[in-house]
Length: 308
Picture (spheres, rainbow, N blue to C red):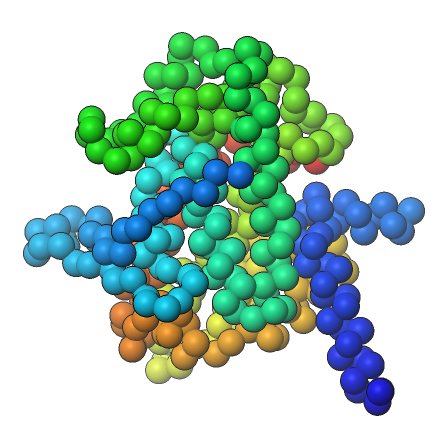
């Protein structure tokens, strides 16, 4: 094996290791130490644009992409199902949104897809905690939490029926916070696998993806569209990089180099032009923003934005 082949193989092995420890609290925790289940089924393939202007003109549909694993229409449907009442987020559609975002990252190639493995681990932790909490009297909710988690949809709709079947302690972001605080599961000084700490890591990663998609939807500046690699790197530097060590940031740079060109994203979202890509991604970004803001508020109100 030549020198170049050995170097390439070494980089792949390194990224495999780093990919499994990507999110802060995973990667940084293990690196520093070294130095010293719900799957929501949603078959919607067409969704209405939620903007007032489009409602006035009539519904505009977001089509599914036949033959693809990642479906932007499915991602949007999960995101739109997540907000509950005026301030909460339902965990099942939230985690289903992450399932689709994992497929999105995996579609970008093996280097970027490695990042998704840690995210899958995080979503599995919350799902497992929800299963363990079923039938546990200590995980019962107070009456105020039940009222907070009532879904803001019309009675008899699909979302209302699905939500009514899952009213345990891990029903929503706020119910999970309430239960884990009351059970003493949240440690503000040491690393644990609590649902709240795990959610915080997902929350940080969601901001990174939101900003990346937002930048990818931007119209050309001076007739030039910047490369997805450049945009993803820029989004990372202003979000997740703030929680990563120098070593992790350098590894991230290697992963972004392998990101596909813009034409690949046209195919991934089933569009032909940048204007169509912008329309589809802006809907997703708006939906992510609603979920992110609600989660941010819930974590901030309970002093959980800096859990170790």
